[in-house]
Length: 87
Image (cartoon, rainbow, N blue to C red):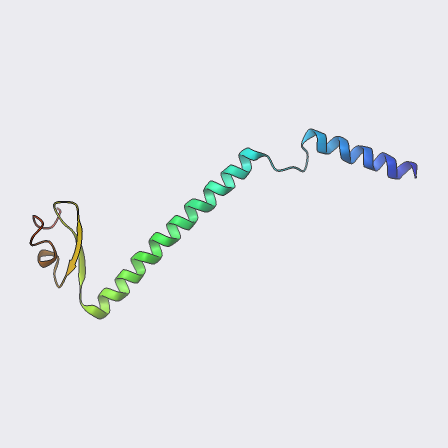
């Protein structure tokens, strides 16, 4: 019984010092890391999907001189009404 009480007191002491408890700063870092990984995955997935679609449709995407993105059979055609293709 004495050992059980000693163990409980030691456990409570450790918990009061924060041992074994995740710190809010590290939780935030993990959350931020997971969020960035999710965004990167979504961006990569979108780009891959667009590339696959373009193979089957024959369309290309281009960023035009006015900053907009358009698609067409050629980059020049896609940006014909938007100041041409962004260099």
